[in-house]
Image (cartoon, rainbow, N blue to C red; front, side, top):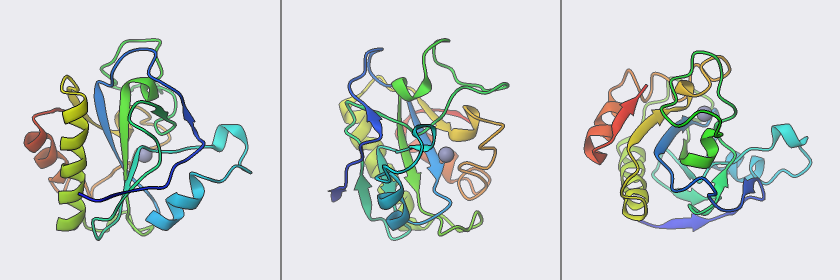
Length: 174
Ligand SMILES: [Zn+2]
């Protein structure tokens, strides 16, 4: 598994609330190259600055933006009707690892075998570092109002999300 370090200034140092409990899967609404620049766009207003730990292309290329020991700004705040299983009062970013997956702006873009395998490999790498991580989550489980289609049908209804949860031994939260 080759991981290319890109980096992003959009992150919070350390994990003051302990190790992550959840791996969160996203769909990019864009491309890996777009993530590289968006996560490094310091001219954005503070509330629009975002990042994820990893981005994975349709061809299985992996970029890393934030160290696992630090918090990516990926999941926003808990919205009404969320099903976040973590403790109340702690931002989910503090207790999660986030993976963005390329979709080339097409919500119906199929998860390729290469993209799935790379996501699985990254999941294993994360679990190697954090063996007590317990949940595989969709972004929409945290922000159902603003991100109802993240990661959407390409992951969930296609069965890839469930297959990934089983392969990693994680409890799915959809
Ligand atoms: Zn998302």
